[in-house]
Amino acid sequence: MALVNLKQLVTDASRRGYAVGSFNVVNMETLQAILQAAEENRSPVILSVAEAHFPFIDLEEFSPIILRAARKATVPVAVHLDHGQSFSAIIKVLRNGFTSVMFDGSTLPLEENIFKTREISRIAHAVNVSVEAELGHVTGGEGDASPGVADPSLFTDPQEARLFVTETGIDALAVAIGSVHGIYRGTPQLDIPRLAKTRKLTGVPLVLHGGSGLSDDDFREAIANGIAKVNVYTDMSQAAMAKIRTVDTLPETLGFPEFMVQVREAIKEAVTEKMRVFGSVGRSN
Ligand code: 13P
Image (cartoon, rainbow, N blue to C red; front, side, top):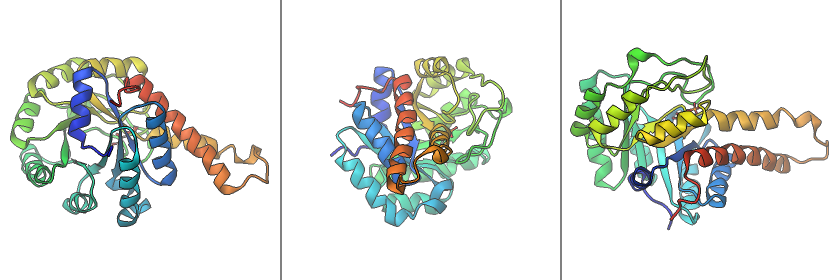
């Protein structure tokens, strides 16, 4: 049984100084690519389904497939809702057996974010499901690849973060420190002192969204200062699209499923590269 919750994964990552990759599942190819990368590299992993991607996935139909694959895996796997913004999305994934949820109230006023996150924590924890929440706001098009820049006025306030974590009882906190979802416009600048202070004041494992397009040094510094989970989607999507664009150069006799294996391999390489820089390779036990 390799299915675990997020708390188990991020606690180990924090303790041993690496980060677990959280990769978005949008179809069968992404699911297989992520799990193959995890098994081949003996890496724990998080399979993330974003509420923004629900239109591409029939959740009722696909959840049993994701969960079965996670249980069969020989490395620890959490099945997580990414950016759950509606109460119904949270309840749907709980009913479908996910082991972790992110409630994203980052665009709400602080009091309302606390109130709603606390409510989700109480419900999820009652059935041993972990909870991630966001304070401050990571900009950019979540679930797509539109270019973005970070907005320092929306960065996480470490003092507020302490209050937020105490009041909500969450297991992991997503922070806004300079990363963006999607493709970066300009060079990203992570606010590492802010990250370190947030970690010190909250004591919980921290989460970095917008993991595509950051440098290896960015990741190393972020992990050394409290990041235990990194979310990645755009780099996987771009790797798949780059392979798909080569289709005209391939023999006309190549069949569709054989071609999709090549797409899957490209995604797997992108995932593997991240696992190496996050330091999660070989940490499965
Ligand atoms: P990227 O698409 O920038 O990798 O971000 C993914 C993410 O943070 C999903 O929550």
